[in-house]
Length: 275
Image (tube, rainbow, N blue to C red; front, top):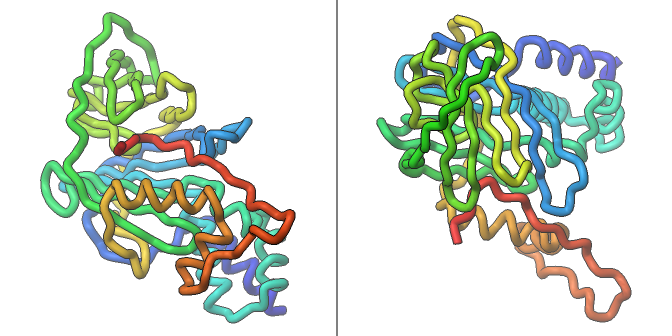
């Protein structure tokens, strides 16, 4: 009975979207994107998810709807005090594996917060939540003599480089809003499509609607950091996941010197490089 009730709660969260956090603004436009991105350099396939850009009067937020639903579901499970086995069964019945949480798009970007021309970036490493604040990217966009149609809107092309990646974007002057997916912005129209030259990251608009909905600064117990610190930490995590978790929990890192076992080491696929 408890398991059936839990699945019902998760499905309800999936349909309405649960949020807890600080109310920042109210949306005037919701822009929906299909996203494909690499999590690790070693990955053969890209992760696919859905994302939304919530545009308000003062602030905007960009995040993965799928990831947020998953974490809401996990929080509900934790609140009910289920065992690990019950948690796994519930998530599997929902169609989402607990292990898959880490393989989605856990970051969120809040533009013009905490103040104009700045942004707040939130992300997680394992189950630890972090955030940092920085200036909005000053991308030197080069306008291209090309046009296209994205999601029914006439678009112009621009190319720009930012922290190690070359981005090609399509923006629409029909929507004169300086914003876009992730941290991308700085053009005279809304960015409806963006991809990097290496082919690791794609954002494509699939729908736009005028809608009033709360913009929430989402996340509990977040620790403030810097972009450079977060890049170092996420790199260390993927080098040795069990060692990193042990260290963060105040325990010594595992000693592999006297065993045949070696942790599998990965390299995160970074959207920007602070080296």
